[in-house]
Length: 190
Image 1: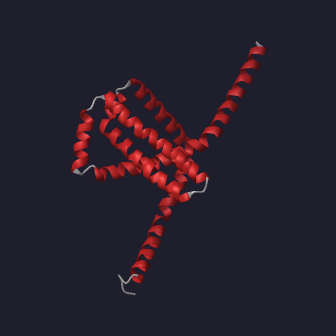
Image 2: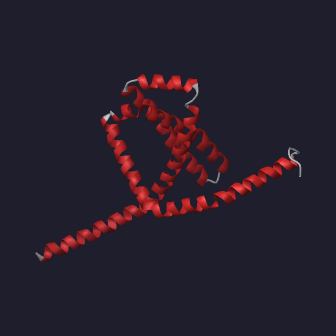
Image 3: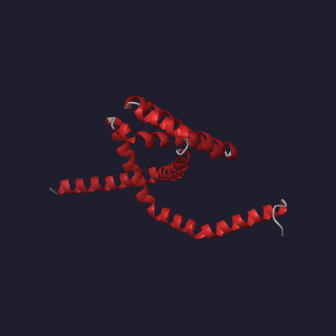
């Protein structure tokens, strides 16, 4: 009896350290991923709301919605894969301190692929989730994202508060720069 309690205590200690090690190893890349995903995903949704009002996009969306799930799934997965490749490539370029190339890859490849993914997902969410393995994977990705968001909540809230607090100051600075440029270009009198 004493022997099993000691083993149980030892096993709990190992699990605790294993969870701690997992958190330490996974949290930094997960944090980076969630921040980048949130910036791109939210920006893409806002941009798509504006683009969706055009006739060409509306017609394409109607055609996309008529496709079966087996046709929509590859149309979703290809830009999703390109989005991740673009993100990793941009990260590699940032590590190499190639700032312009990283921004270009991030905007062109990651940005355009993310726009496609968001547009297809918003257009065909029910069809995509009707595919069993996709729904299972989607559920686990959302669970992992929720885990990361819960872990980074205090830091994220602090960063958001600081951004909101400095937004007025940043807006004033941009307005002052805009006025200075307009004055120098002769578009506004001193």
